[in-house]
Length: 220
Length: 215
Image 1 (spheres, each protein chain N blue to C red):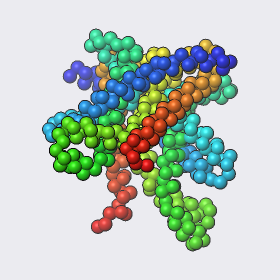
Image 2 (cartoon, helix red, strand yellow; image 1 turned 30 degrees about the vertical axis):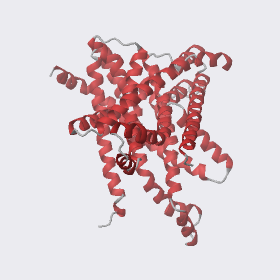
Image 3 (cartoon, rainbow over the protein chains, first blue to last red; image 1 turned 90 degrees about the vertical axis):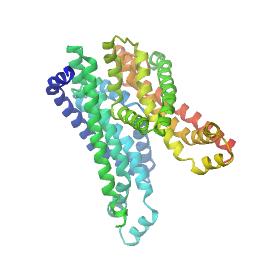
Image 4 (tube, each protein chain N blue to C red; image 1 turned 180 degrees about the horizontal axis):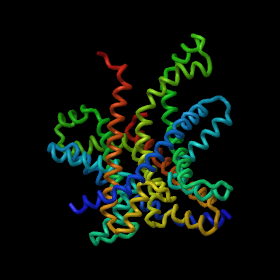
């Protein structure tokens, strides 16, 4: 019982942290997903330099641990004369990381659209961008959505990494409370419960989303 | 400059490999128990295994590490940073490995089990000589991929003070003010290790395929 009252006392301090975590996740997804789509389209494009640029960004974003990417930007941007807040740095690092992983899912989605669709679009006079936007992309997005939603959950968990560069998110707030009260076990248990509950809620939403997206496949 | 940084940061490779390898091995064994429990005839055991796997997976790795490293000493259970990191990553790896084993087992057709039964093989022989070798071959690429993922996650151990690659890179960045270069070196080390692991797993995979005689 003691622990529960403690938890209620801490909530006012933790909730602002959680909001920062959610903001960080939301912005990383908002920038990361379009970036991923861009990387995927670039990788499939004809000009070789574009393919290289896409390859480089995707492999760095995926190959480096997210933590190293975060430190890399945090320690190197000020040297280059760019001073950003730690939150902005975290958003850039996480967006890059998200974009790199998302590009693989987009690429798989684009590859899964049958070639006949592209040919049919061409035959109907929908060339280039128009055909891509109206025919290929909607089908590819439907295929990529479930793995992208799974990635979104991982990004939420990854937002906890921003703690290391002093972004005032949930993990930092928990650490703060821990250092003041020495109740590390209790405060991190609460943090774990918060992360776990929200993740479960997101996973539940994804299941609903998947069912909705698959509706056109079900015969009634 | 890079000639000074590389040896300074490469000192961490040993502990990075140690933490990753030990966690993958321990997690792999616990994962076997979990996947066994998840298929047990007792509903309670099944529910417990599923509960464990889900709880582990929905909590971020860094929260696990802090919970273990800062939280457990309250029970007078003092852990070194390396022990805490290995325990934390083993717990996380066990849940993911259990899922990998499960998908490996699912890929084995029921006919294999039935055929073994028809030939009069005992359950132990069936699991040991028929199911496991086939399931392992299916699961190997996924295990290698997860191993590489765990390698990258092991960078988190630097946050509780394990002296691995990221820890030394961070020190070098602070001492030399060569932040960009330090973390590029660290990143390159991670990528090189990942590539080596990927190459080895591909060779083993090819060899296993040859042995079994499927292309």
